[in-house]
Image (cartoon, rainbow, N blue to C red; front, top):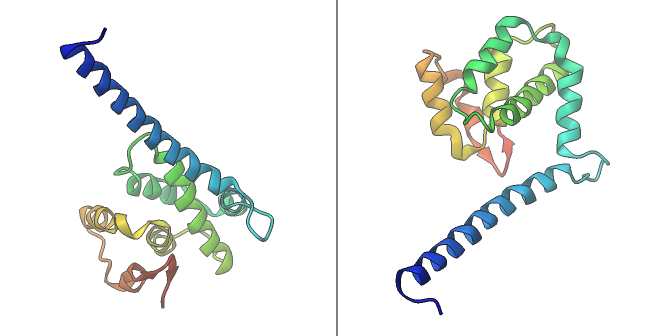
Length: 150
């Protein structure tokens, strides 16, 4: 029969494992929703891949280094996903504007738009570290339900 400290040890580990499974399940479910096709027949991940593939020739070494620098605050485990998402948004903007190459303006705009509002504090901190003035981009920080206002 379980008694004393061993009982509490088992209860503790049951709670920890259930919590970890819940957290893992939450992130797996979010990933599943990104893969699920939308009304146009393509998923969010399909669109990200499309924009990265179509705009890859616009990226030079300087732009790649800047994207690398901006994503340094992202934990290493999630950094490739963040680069893909941010790079896709930058590529989407570049393709819509028919840009000849990816420049600093496109990188900053795409970075702000691709960043969830809850992470703006970290984004602003990173931009301040590299001495970048965000004043011309303040309107992009005003998101309403995932859409930007101009």
